Amino acid sequence: MGYFDGITNSLSVDTGSFTSNLISDILESSLSSSGSGAKFANDVAFGKNYVNLAMRIRYAQGWQWTVEVDGLSGFEMFAKDITYGFGNIEHDTKVIGSVEFNKPTHATAGTITLTVMDTEDGKIHSWFQARKARVTNGDGTVNLPPEYLLGIRIYRVTQEGAKQLEQEVKVFPTQLGEITRSRDQVTEFLSYPLTFVKHTSAGSAVTGVLGAVAGTVTGSVTGAASDAIASAQVIKF
Image 1: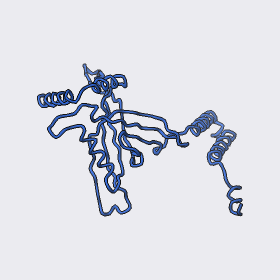
Image 2 (image 1 turned 45 degrees about the vertical axis):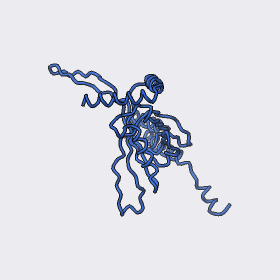
Image 3 (image 1 turned 135 degrees about the vertical axis):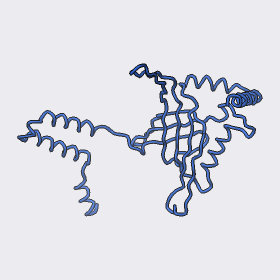
Image 4 (image 1 turned 60 degrees about the vertical axis):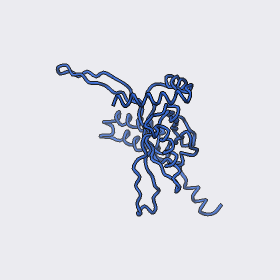
């Protein structure tokens, strides 16, 4: 062991323990002193307990996540950030006199937006475009869910590297966001957003039943159903 190694070892300190002891010493001094410290002893004691409790909580940091998608191995290596929200409750408002009443109407499905980096040959771009092409056809028809749905799994990651599943949803791709390229971006990676919409706000039981029923449909029936859906959409809109 070298000379500097010995100095480093002798000066090493547990940062968390040092901070906790320092705060504890300050609060103890405030409690034992006269004047304002004695007058507000109860408040200081409460503050000390609150700080001690807060320091024991392992708050999640923004980097502690990872994501997986069906059909593309290693997708987490390209994901830069993620924004998602599920289960919003929509409502209608009724005003009677000066009183407002709110009535829940339905639960929205929600969306997922991923900002991704890409390879020089456009691996992510090609994958997303291929998945999006499964939703609609060139003749104006729309395919059934089994053709285009894919699973996305979002995990929490602990500081020890363990993964815990937070959300697993069936989605379909909707938009490849605007891509900005600049010759000034010499040291920056190309990145752009990908948007997916959750298939349904219903629970897994309903989703499973719908998937099982749709999965038994033959190719010819699928085409007929797609035509019927397209015709209905034309009539409706």
